[in-house]
Length: 292
Image (tube, rainbow, N blue to C red; front, top):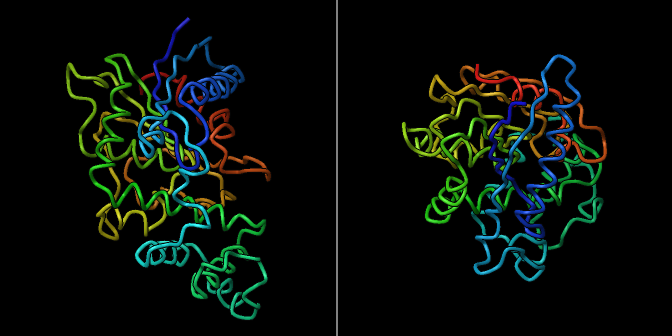
């Protein structure tokens, strides 16, 4: 039985778990998806998920409530609010904004620390993706910005993740902010050189990726209209749920070159769930399908 060596890069909101737990959960979900493929020969996965979130609180592997830098009780800096507002503006429609303008500011019970501008945009986003997930999204956008605006921390995170790659690692899977980290590693050519960890890497799988949000790409220093691209030897498979409220359901096909893309339906409970993405057919097929 073939064994595929995989590194998973977790995303936002993983402060209260551990690398051991993430690795076990991701491995089970991914293997479940692979085992469901009728046309793929038996394939096992050897997967590791480095818990890079632990770097936000040195000396611990698991963060507690007191370490939460992005809770509603922590006021946003002006620059952070501008970024969150920009991301909302990228994702909402004109009819959503028009609806929000007619509603009292207290309709959603949003945090009082938020400005009226941000509250209106959050209400507009909730009109497009009903369900009360806007507070969750704001927390995640703040975490994305935290990573992207601290070059030293970002470099430390990339190094921490890169250390888990071996010469035999064939696939890297990035979920949510993890997809940004994985893409960053590849675009900076910090993986894959001959004789170095990741030299046998042939596939990048991104799931629930915020790379489809223009505000995120701008914060990465990418000019509007500039395509996302990888070395030609790396196959890129992007999997997205059109109802994923964290990404606005955005795909990457319009902004990335040489991309294979597949929509999935992760259900209504949590369409952004890493485990639901991991056990989906497109992700399983990308991992088990072998070198392109």
